[in-house]
Image 1: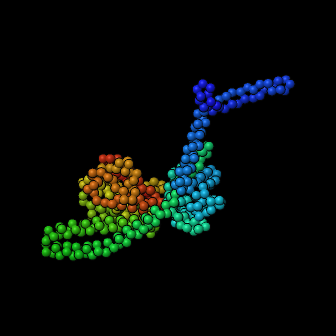
Image 2: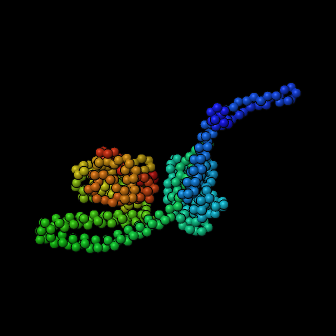
Image 3: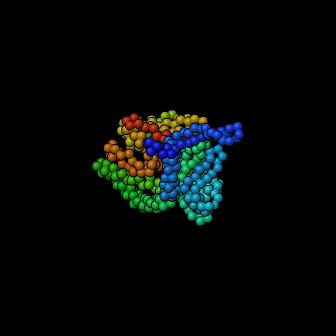
Length: 395
C-alpha cells in the first residue's frame, strides 16, 4: 500500500471475519490491519543474503552438505556429488560418500565427524576421495560445524577441491626430500674430515685449531638437524611416515632425555620433575623426537641461565608431558599459528635466532598422527608451557 499523504510504501497484513444478518446476508466485515513493513523488509533482506551466498558458493565451486543431528538425514548439493564421482541427479547417501573416501583417511574422518557431533566442535580436514564412476582421485578440504535452523540442530558444511594445491605440495616435498638426501652425503664426508682434523689437532696440542674445528663441527651438526627436519616434513606430508605404537614406560624415556639434556645443555638450568612409572601406547622414537624438539626450542627461545622445567602428570586416561621455559613468551596472535609449517614469530628478538619454523610443526604433526593433542599456554614476558598428551595403559 502507498500512503496518501507521505507516498510511503507499506506492507500490511489484514485479518478479519465476515458477519451475516438474520437472513444470512453478509452485512459487515470486521478485523484488524497490521503494518508488517519491517518484518517483510527483513525477510526480503534475508532472502537477498541467501541468494548472494548461493551465488558465491556456486562461483567458488563449493559443494555443500547438511546432516540432521538427531535423525542423521543427509542432504547435499549436486556439486558435492560431483566431488565424490556421482552424477548430479543421482542418489548419494552419507554411507555412499564415506565409501569413496580413501582408506587412509576413512577412520580419521569418521572419528572427527563423530567428535564434531558429540562435542559440537568445528570440523576441518583435508582428505583424498576416489570418484565412484570416474575413479578419479580428488583432494578436498571439508569444513563444517553445528548450526540451528527452525529449532533443530544440523551439521552443515562445505567441500572445496584442493587437488592442484596438494599436487604442488607433493612435488615440492619430493624436491625437498631429494635435495636433502643429496646434501647429507657431502655433509657426512665433511664431518668425517673435520673429526680427523680434530683428532690430529688434539695430538699436536694446537688449541687454536681445536677451537676452530669445534665451531665448524657445531655448524655441521646444525645443518644436519635442519636437513633431518626437512626430510621429516617431506615424509610426513607424503604419507611415508608411520606410527609404530608400542607400550613403554614414559618415565624411562624422560630419564633418557634428562641424561642427554644434562650432557649437551650447559647454558640453562634444566629441571626434570620426579615421575612415577607410567605405561603409554605410542611410537617411542617419535615421542623422544617431540621431547627433544620441545627442549631444544625452550633452550633456543629463552635467555641463558634461565630455568626449563620438564614434567609429567597423568589422570585416569592420559599422561601429560610439559616443557616450560622462562622466555619472552608468545603473543596471542602468534599462538594460533605457532604449530603451522615454516611459521616464524616476527620481532626484533627473534631476528637473531636461526631456524625455519620446523620444530613445532613436526611436534604437532607427530602428536596429531597419534590422534592426541599438543597445546601451548603463554603470555608475553612470562614464558611458555608446551603440553602434549599420550594414552595410558589401563590394564
